[in-house]
Image 1 (cartoon, rainbow, N blue to C red):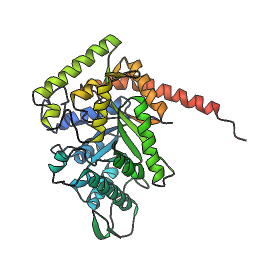
Image 2: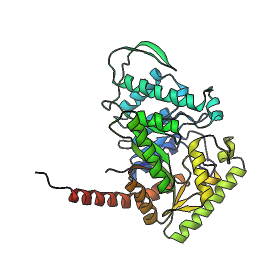
Image 3: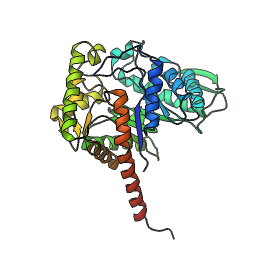
Image 4: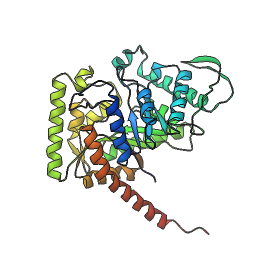
Amino acid sequence: MPVEFLGIGGVNDGSETTPRSGAAFDKEYTLKFARAHEEHGWDRVLFAYGSGSPDPAQAAAYVASRLEKLQILLAHRPNVSYPTHAAKTFATLDQISEGRLTVHFITGGTDHEQQREGDYLTKDERYGRTREYIQIVKRIWTSHEPFDHEGEHYRFADFVSDVFPAQQPRPNVSFGGSSPAAYRAGGAEADIYALWGEPLAQTAEQIESVHAAARAAGRTDLPRIQVAFRPIIAPTEELAWEKAHRTVEAIRARTAAGGGAANRRRSLTNPENAGSQRLLAVAEQGERFDRALWTPTASATGGAGNSTALVGTPETVAQALLDYYDLGVEILSARGYDMLNDTIDFGRHVIPIVREEVAKRDRERAARQPASA
């Protein structure tokens, strides 16, 4: 089974531990950071979406036009543009990148963040809209004849695009969420289903929920699973744990000073979205799980996004990632807190171990297969 590594397409050098040193969109840093991923074994990077952040599609196009191998995961919220327009944007970016695009559709986890850009639907209504949006985009990508659409959220007539993706029949669609409504929508429509890092037992349960939703939607294929972590690595276990405690104290200090989660007006104790609620519930059960999972970084951010850590030496963190691979996770998402240096260290010291062990597993699996008659 293949394994892929997803990093973050940062557009400035800020993180939960450190304020950015320059503009929100630092063009030179954006390219330097993306190139560090390409040169150190990563497969793709995510260009994330925020209501006031630089446009991720433009940043992704800038990077894709200057790098030859790195793949792009573009985050997109359906509330910010009509699906006919978005489908053309994505197709154009896939042409610019020569077929390196995947689109990650975000339904929106908090009402406040959605309302910043005029979206006042309830969360369940947003999931219905996202599913309809994805269906429309897929059809635009693959239909060379004009068609009409009249659904719950969108209505148009006689539309056909004049630009199509480089990938045939279409780019992959990524989706995330941890509620029953999310499982239904993503299980039905996603090629890749993204989860945040939880203990192995809970992750296995979520994978089964996603796959059950896909089967209930009549699918014979199943979404590939992606899980996200914040690796904290050092040459020894002792140094890794010292680094982990320094990291969480830096997060708390930055939050207390008005940066990080507090600056986003996001509850640190009572988040709206199911994914963050799940992370905080895990954190309440304990700080350490399985081989290397550590929850205080999630607690310090209110379970904000990708926030659970894997702590240890490169070998320990690699083995922890392989535990998730053995559950059926094919895409491992990771980003550090010292953005550039952690990307390089993870690429140099963790990715090769995981790839070598995956190749070994694949060889052993192939050896166990009966010879064809």
